[in-house]
Length: 212
Image 1 (cartoon, one colour):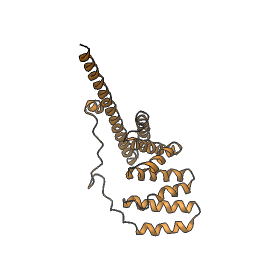
Image 2 (tube, rainbow, N blue to C red):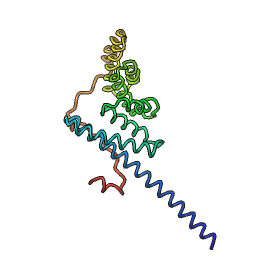
Image 3 (cartoon, rainbow, N blue to C red):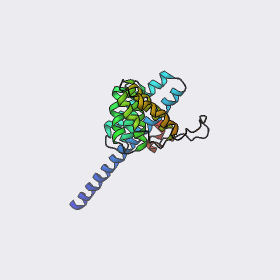
């Protein structure tokens, strides 16, 4: 009868919407997983001096992260995708393309870790582009970082940027502040005493394809 037909149609429609949301979410999740996995491989290649491989991998990170942003610009993971794309472009010596992405994360992200990572890269790019004042502004955001290594590095870089901008008094004050910052943790050989960050597991439906 007609009421039963309407109920069936409604259930099919609801199921279809739910399926689309599930598939879309899984695709986004896997896109981020792949971008982060490639970024890890790119950093490893850099550490090992494999410049060509690192450049190729950072290019793939940029493409993956951009794809996530285009499809899901307002997702809760959009800041991380934007950060990854910005870092990848900076590693590819494209600071002009990296800065808008990184500065958006630096200024607007509610995730402090993402904001600080973006600020470090913004400072570096600003120095490379001959803008010590812009670099100084970015590094100044990190002088109160809870991460002692990042704080000390930012204080040093901030002082250098001030010196380049023609503020010798400010530059002289920065080493003193850096010496009062929390001491750096002793270096730990790679693979000892540290647990590497774990990338999220991909959706089960695509786990097999990612192993290929």
